[in-house]
Length: 181
Image 1 (cartoon, rainbow, N blue to C red):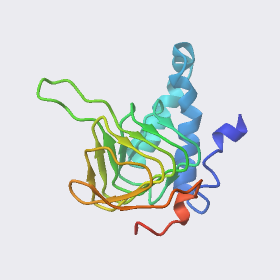
Image 2: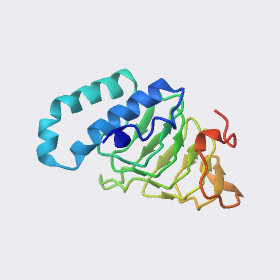
Image 3: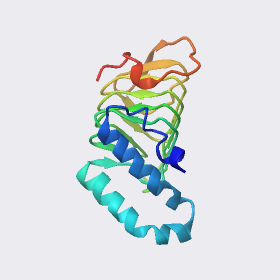
């Protein structure tokens, strides 16, 4: 149980806000799996919403699927749709939005699926039912509305792939300097 709760701790070393937010997230996440547990855990879920969303300005719903070693760089103004899927070893900077699109008929698109080892620059919007591959870097200020293949660097509005990287087995995203803070 402790290894589950602290799975993001080392990835956020020196980032107390990131460590706290992800510890609180991991504590609330099991409530999304069981309706009875959610009812018992309701006071904690209200506490989570007030502390993380209202005071820390990070919208990361407790039911969101987030892989291990998630790093929140400068955790502020992060908005993640609860149906989004985020892989292992991802690095998100401040003012990032991951969400769906409201269609003309009033329905909503699917939410993005983000692969492993993805580094997202500040002020990035990733919207719609798209897939971001593994080992991808997305430059600051990009608006991603189409799939991005594995091992790519994408920038711009709309984002486009500007470089294909050599495949990597696994890299700690916060050690990369490909996308500036």
